[in-house]
Length: 419
Ligand SMILES: Cc1ncc(COP(=O)(O)O)c(C=O)c1O
Image 1: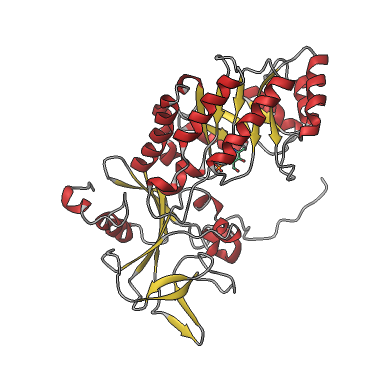
Image 2 (image 1 turned 180 degrees about the vertical axis):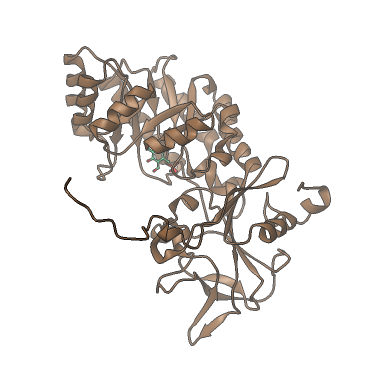
């Protein structure tokens, strides 16, 4: 199915139109995550253009983490765009290698010796998070490059703390080894100003402790504004950030051969996805409370709940046209028994006339949503559809089976013996 100019007039947001929603609802059903390849390309281009404008494009490399959106069909175009992938589990490496990806960095939490050996064997840079793990690599993995992850927040996240930098420097010197690259992750959703602040910290660490490093990794954390309605303004200001980076690099005399790595997820992926749900009943009204029953559930995207994230939401009729009638405050319920089963936290302004055959379209769910589906409450995962650059829609993940939760259940008990 292709867009045409007549259809484009009926867009319900910048990249999705009525007719594609109709086709998807008819062929796939709901709940369904829908992704736009076109939007993904635009987001990458925005970032790359900003790097070029700041004159640092030749020394930048981007590695988008796989865990916030783990659909290889969506990420496929990264291969031709020269965008790498950040991995954290061996299974991710295997599944992506099978479909032709080969540009990886690895940034894990704390991992076992066996996992360190596994990753060292792949030859991809692996960012380790403790002195003990680095020690194991030095002693057991030949000349494998040494890359380290710092936790600037002292937040308990995996990563070396500032107070361990001197010890790491001494450990490397005593073995005649150098640090290849280090990564500083400062938590998610940061403003341009605070991300620019981090640049100086990174350069200070480089100059003070690891002047032989060949690249510096600024990790992720580039803010995306979920509540903003204007699409470009939702995004991190890469122009300002890269201009700041170029200026600070000059000021700190950072040699030109030093590469800059980035691991953005949210900014690249969030507005690439929407979640389409069906409304199951007319508005449920109790004294002091109104609820809209959807066929979604908080388990489809739990991060919205625990991050208390407000998403922009559209209410669509059976023909996928936006319902513009009188609105009242109501909460958006999921289909399970759980008291807190709201697909999004808080109240939304909902058309009072909403009812069966209508739909809820949740925007900006391309990152940390489908991949976070939990099995709690026995609700199967949602399907995923990719709309490609030409406007053709493809089913890329089928709906979870209604018996998914029990897929490993054995028909009979297997007795365990000590033989
Ligand atoms: C090491 C690392 N890099 C990158 C990211 C992506 O961050 P964001 O989605 O804020 O860009 C994360 C997110 O948790 C991370 O842990």
